Image (cartoon, rainbow, N blue to C red; front, side, top):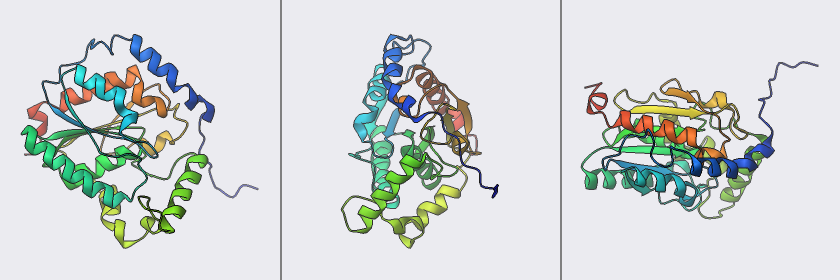
Length: 255
């Protein structure tokens, strides 16, 4: 019987295990050697990892950005399972210090949940953020993910609710603690902040439709969800986006 409920279709989950092949292809590519990638000229970039991941998950991207002249900094996240509101407060302080030290606004790159955080920061502090790049981030509907991932989210929520430290709680979905986070999540990104949303129809973890943020320039790539952190096509698009954020005319477009 058709009850009118549409179950999101995801590519085979096992394909996410092939992310290592994307890393191998990246290492062989001209993009890895800087081909066609504009020089970063020392501009600041902060990288934010995804759900259940830490800063180390973006180590390859960090290396590549530094090779191409960007001044990078980590988010300071060991494993991304904490309360969204608390995490963004800490990231705001980190971005503020980074902007003060570098003397200019900071570009943010966030993978999956990290991209949601980057978007919220852009809404909250456009004075600190030059632009954001989201990688497979469900910024339209943060729970539009594979059932296996939803089960992991629920498990973390239960553990956090039972007072396991460092984990978000079930009350974060509707509670007062994350009201500001929810308000920022649904707000438009200010026009003075560049925004590129990278998505893939091969994504086996996040429904790619949930990545089509109306505030963003939407860019499709051929990559797995996990592999977006080490994919040559993704890196080329990141380079293009960061070069746009570095254009002072773009920064001032809303002035």
